[in-house]
Image (cartoon, rainbow, N blue to C red; front, side, top):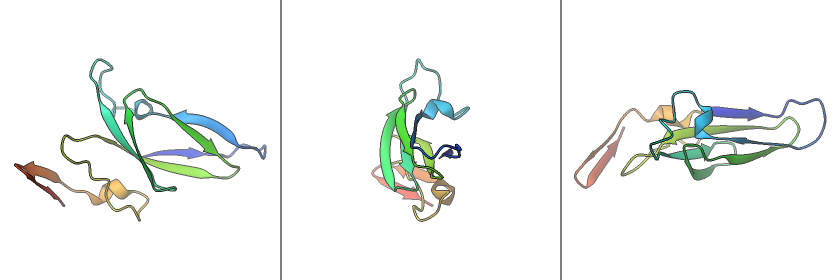
Amino acid sequence: MLAAFHIHERDVEIEGSISPADVPGLAGSSEIDESFIVYEATRRQLMRLEANEQLPVRLQPNEASLYVILREQPVVTPIGLVQKLLSADAVLTCRTTGRQTTVT
């Protein structure tokens, strides 16, 4: 989970960026190509980013955005229960055997 907050005293839109590399221990070595699934919980948008790729963020005064960032899995990357702010906490296991994937 990564969060962005606009708490500046000036009443103007702010711009910045987030990246999987911003989360300590999440992105591996830069020598390895890793992809991540990024779910913006407040806007319910799903994106795919590479480890060092930047996602532009714009926030209005007193606005916040919450991002679930998950390492992309080979078959399926479950993001959990999207009606919850910490959606990924709803996923306990994800197992693929042959052509069947089970998420609990």
